[in-house]
Image (tube, rainbow, N blue to C red):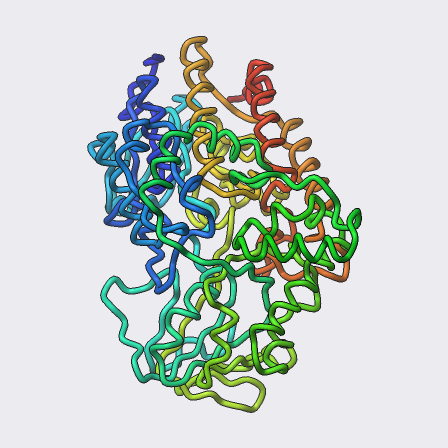
Length: 543
């Protein structure tokens, strides 16, 4: 290993969730002295922070876990088809203990800034407690959904009742029994919390601006036989997920929705709806994300299901998206979401036709109507993909931050892994990485970085830095594939976080790569086969 400049560590990884654990394991395997730092006081990342009622995976257990450790695979047992947040957290702690990772993880170590020293080719990581660390390689494992946002509504600080954000839920139990509760935000978190807390409360006001197409599912327990099958076939299951556009172990659909008769189409839709969850989006037809006519056929099917489930026609109509078609936003998985609106004390408030005008001391005002509340919950999501990276000062060449680079130049990176001007700084699930079941690209990305840094160390390569040409190419490719989806259909857009449209003032750019996870991995393998030349930008003359 290169030891030309004294340093505390060879690699420092920020974040102790799925990414941090995978990176720590793989970088230690090649002999890099590695430390993971995390500002929280527990392992788990997103799963440590998000503890709201109903939090669980949208992906099935069989491919929402690592494949690289036979010990973990053989010894861990999942209990639910869609594991709950506490179970995922228990799994991550099991991984940390079984692979002896905890000794190289420092908790309560929040990063304030990270500064690159061009002369020494080192990163200095400054922590909130005033201490600092030096490292050759700096890796972000901070996740894509970590930087919570609140709505920009007047009076948000004046409410005198209890106030919670799903991303900052208290560790102690929150008793909602008999209370008047309001919820703002109906992305994945809001959709998960609604059916869980609704039976507890006295009155429930759900403030909806944009409805979602939700694919309902069931959550059976995992039998001993099913778990044994997964253990015996994990390599094949993982390989199937790795070769799927969305990173799931499913059969890619073969036909367009336009190639079959209406009767056959309805039969297929019905079959995959009954199978539940992502099976509907991924196994019905091959063009539900790219062909507006096909997408609209799926949309109308789900609208018909909403009308079947929700008894009040006006409520069913409000829950049915009309301004965009299926796949126009990320499709969440539901567990009894639509049926919740049949409860007499659950009220759906349309804030699209009449917006929220103010949050008052007593509650929420929509137009001139004030809804008095005891509890107000925000499920208003995250500054996704870039938020965690721009929230702290990551300073590369010349002291320029990532935030400044992306504000001034537009969102630029090479494969979402590294950015020009930031030598030896890498991102797990960085912006412009695939729209996917995230555990799959996390593992594949950690293994790619392991091979890249092993090659660099063995060949005396001191700096990995994306070339400007590679950034321009990847930005164009990300935009091209994004614009080929129904998410970008003019006149049918739905303020998707994939485009940064959920954050006021954020540039409208594709935050994720929509060309398919398996295609993305081909690009990564090509970069490796070409000797990483697109990551070997020459240092500036004055550096």
